[in-house]
Image 1: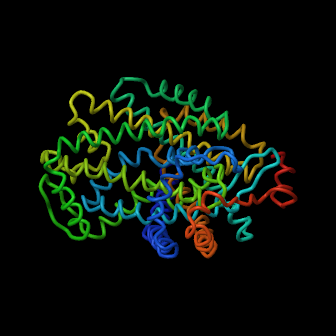
Image 2: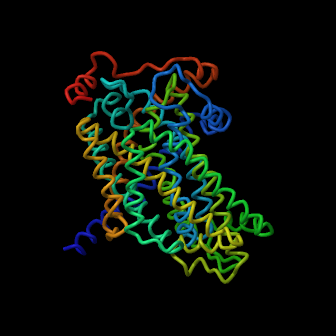
Image 3: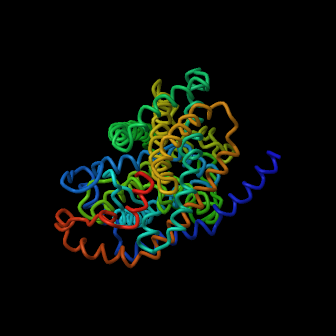
Length: 475
């Protein structure tokens, strides 16, 4: 029975994460890049500055930086470490370039989905701000039924991709490197998770504001150290990545490129999985930000994809390829496990290399647990009301406790499938509301000062249907 169910779910997963989904996501990235006039240029010049500024007079629950780090907590995760290694092992060095390009174009989709999340966010009866694809579908397109589907998919996906698999990764690295029993890791992680998530978004954002910059800087320093060690192989690595992204061939260190198809398949898939642009998860956090208008927070949110994929994933890719070229005994084509490749790369740093990797995986995974806990809460509250929050938090903590001692192959498949399915309603909202995204962008982007001064109207205050529904559910 178990094997049959596993086979069925795997077949479904292969379909939903096939070329159709890759084409839909990547196509949306390119479409919005063109429609917004290459908004990526504003992400660098304006978004990064706005991300560290405050807008205390605007409505919202957390600062713009708090919303950004909460979103980054869920996206900068084990995918940046292990996922890129898997892409290199299965798709060849050329996959790194496609992963990077996915991030560059994905900035536009992250911008668009965050803009409509803030534009159609609502204010509940007790003063909390909520938004995301479900509210954009309901209020922007009058498609509440599709918003419910998104919320259900995302809510259940949080238990797997946001919690169980992350705790399992922490347990595995702790057992292998520190000799700590998995069940102990589960209990400690569950306890630490409970302390934070029962405090709500403000508590989660406060932890993420401190944890995310630390873990990212700590990991990047490790990558820079390895690149310094491999300095004479950096240029050859870049050349190899660009060449093998389009053609079959071999390079020093036993590296073999599988050609355009494999490079795109694994590079794009891992890039999409890493930055979550188009999935509809990060905009849920963006909607809670203190911001005066949708464009302002959309620019801030889009920097998340920049840091996650354009910077962190690229550095990981350069580290892996330069390491393999310098050490021919490491044959990427014989190692399908991305974690092993990354471990061998960090082992080059004397004494502290493995420590950096262990701390990176633990902090990346734990931050993902916190970020997805918030996403799950908002989705559960959308389809079950406020009364569903406490049961959700209790179940989330229980999953964290037992995850290290149960088989997760089926859990991972189900969560991965739900993750893809939640992207479909979100992309429908983004594409159908693209004229609004363009008009809002034109309204503010040509007068950058307006991004700092124009107030955002909060939908959902007063006698709206959403408020009536929320009050009936004791929101």
